[in-house]
Image (cartoon, rainbow, N blue to C red; front, side, top):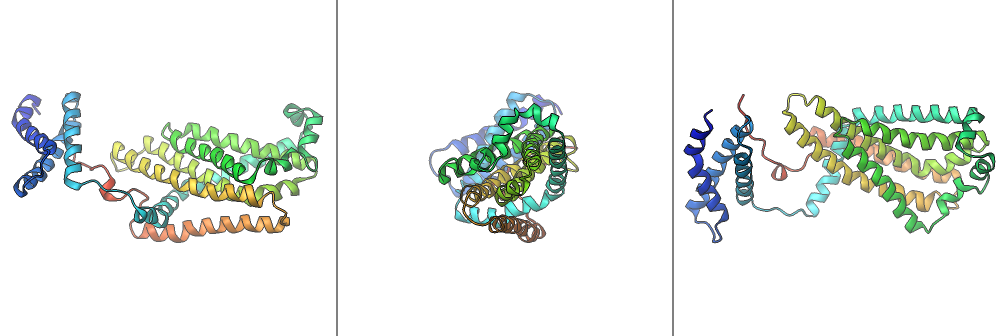
Length: 335
């Protein structure tokens, strides 16, 4: 395509479209129809320019014009309670259900690594000696030691906020760093499993594994599931960079990136529940079986949410993406 000829043939249309978009007064009916027609033509022109190595300045200018025209044609839309309800009843569970082939294997493999670390630490005194001095290890693992008092070391409300912040950061790292081929996500997972494995190994060697699990399981089931879901989504996003499938790589990354952003919002809510359990249930005076029952119930509710609402939403065509009016146009491209 001769770029100079193409620009000369269509510049007047682009200028007219830009003028209509910038017009302060309301458009007449004829002008509104003209705006829609010019917007469609300019979107097609932009697609043609984006398929080749043409002038980036020209492409950028036309991109801005098309974006403004799209806003003028579709109108601004404000998110409301309906959007929030749709997200938590369809979009978020659908995204979790669609990515289950990623985060469930991620959970299984991560827990296997954590168990291996726990066995290694718990059965090898020389490994324990590299973690801390004997007196410090006894202080950590004794009755009323740091592992137990950690959950009641701060007022419940502030502790819940602190826990939520720390876990939300881990989830955000998994989702954001997934775009880097997923490699940093593996490090985040390993760091979490290392901390878990060391704690289980030390408490097991001290003969107090039941106490540790009684403190961990009430909140840890839901909390770790949220981290695994984020990690699986991040790994899926990283794989999309490598293999976008039948979609154009830009389109695939946009779709998966929007789904990952929505996943971050949804998992923040899940972590808020886990944080509340950790702050109010874990250090409570409830018997161990009662605290664990609450944790198992929360985990069962989450999995039911994924496999019932999520499966239903996916069957209805939901993909975990934002609604169509909020998506970028997927423009036709030249072969």
